[in-house]
Image 1 (cartoon, rainbow, N blue to C red):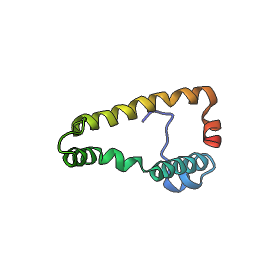
Image 2 (image 1 turned 90 degrees about the vertical axis):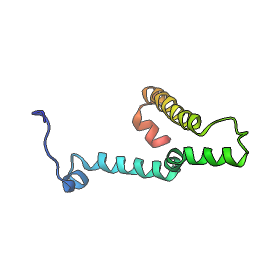
Image 3 (image 1 turned 60 degrees about the horizontal axis):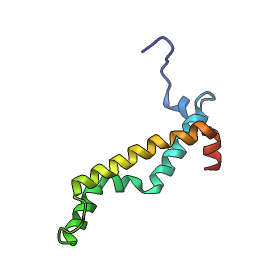
Image 4 (image 1 turned 180 degrees about the horizontal axis):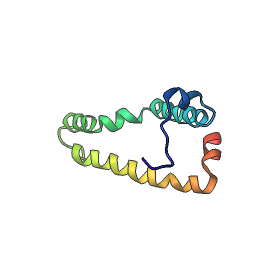
Length: 98
């Protein structure tokens, strides 16, 4: 550890004056992300695409492996594009107004 870091207890991170606000905001964002339902889509993308391919008799245009790559690439591209509004409007404005 560098000399500017210190160990923070769990109690201090949730209820300490210096860290509480940031901890609770991050937990709220994390809960919101879980409620969107994108986690299962990312986890089961290959399974979903395999079943689509099998149910269409192999006529589905995307293989499960290519589909998994497309899901990952789409996540990467839009995660990078998400930085543009952050720089334009600021994190606080986006968190408050969406």
